[in-house]
Image (cartoon, rainbow, N blue to C red; front, side, top):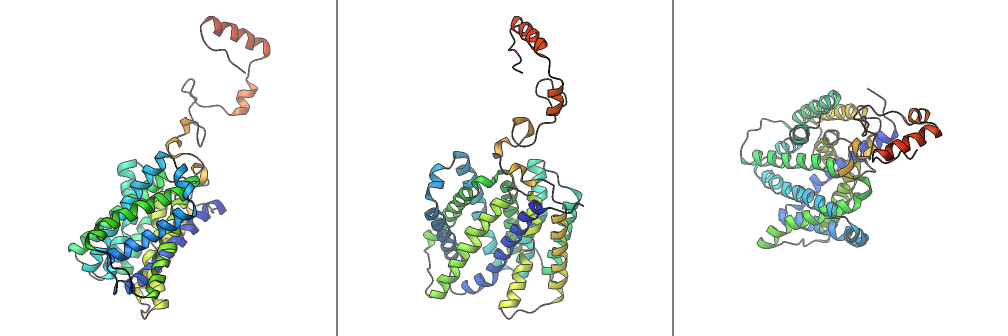
Length: 352
């Protein structure tokens, strides 16, 4: 394994911040759900985040390309749909079982990436996946069965894995803000439709509004924005393993701010998740940000974006370095002779 440089560690650390933010939502949401309907809470959370992002940079949406709108709507719809089985399943199973099953997106992510995109991961990445899966199992497992709640949690995990895979394919650093805003719009619409049909229940206490504000700004807009930026510089499977530490953050923060206590499952599971993150960080490619400056539809080498193609487009042979092409360039007399011959054959002359 290589020692990663700063460019490789920044997206890893950024996704770790995202994971911590999402982990903080568990004990906050658990308290809010004792007084607010789950759908109402989710709708208010994402509606406030959407409003903030639109008001800060409204011109970003106006100038956004059609492809950015389509990508953001698809990603946001998938993320919004994942909220339903997660929260319904949470009401029908234990919190530890739900945490483990939702965290299995770390396993589904490389599987979906290979099935639909033929994306192959390194051995170190698969080692990280196994460590993370073992950590989640040790952290949350307490003899769970597969009832309706567990199956719904697994369905949510598959949707989250799909979101991570597609995000890794479509995310471009230059349009991270716009793509995040469009995602927020789509998430809000997906959640608001059933909420408005059954009636929204706004919170009655000012402290609840403050908590929803934190969930909206930090755990929604900021977190998904950072995820969008970071995944333009990191493989989807790597991102999934890093974010698999979410249950660890949730438990650690719950121990720090609530009456929950440390147990052996937290220590063992947390150690395995930490090891998975270290493995993933050390297995980062040397230049993961090379594709961040290129449109998603033109990332292949032969298109002229990103890395130079290994095949010469003129004859299908291996491409020569620029220095070799300059050294082997024909002389002035040779160029004039070639130009005359090409003109006689109806070919464009060599401009060199």
